[in-house]
Amino acid sequence: MATASIRDLRNHFPKIRKLLDADGEVLLTEKGRVKYRLVPHSPAPAKEPPPLDYWARLLAYQPRAMSAAQARALQEDLRGER
Image (cartoon, rainbow, N blue to C red; front, side, top):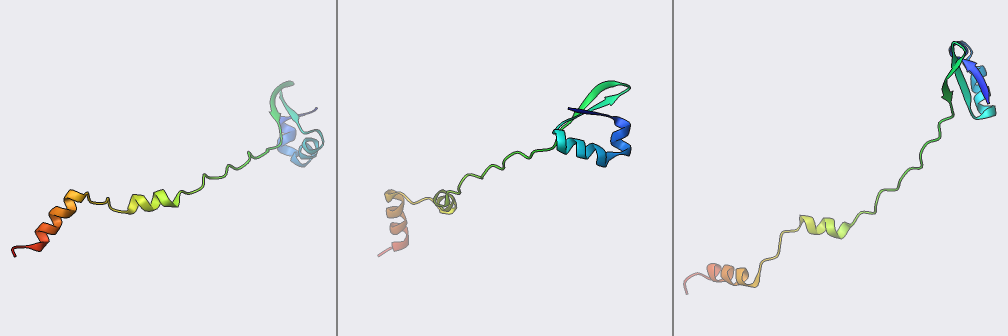
């Protein structure tokens, strides 16, 4: 494990970067005491979004079906006086 000071990090970053690549971790010191730990970033694996339910989506946009009683009442209204 390599160590470097905060000043080295500011002024000699390419050297610190090589240490980080070689050792995988660099301890940063401030006034002779270890204060920080520098490690390479490893991105989290991307989650796949859940598959889309197209049928449920289609049904959400469709109007509700009429009941049989409502259909009969509508037919009677449209029929008029005969």
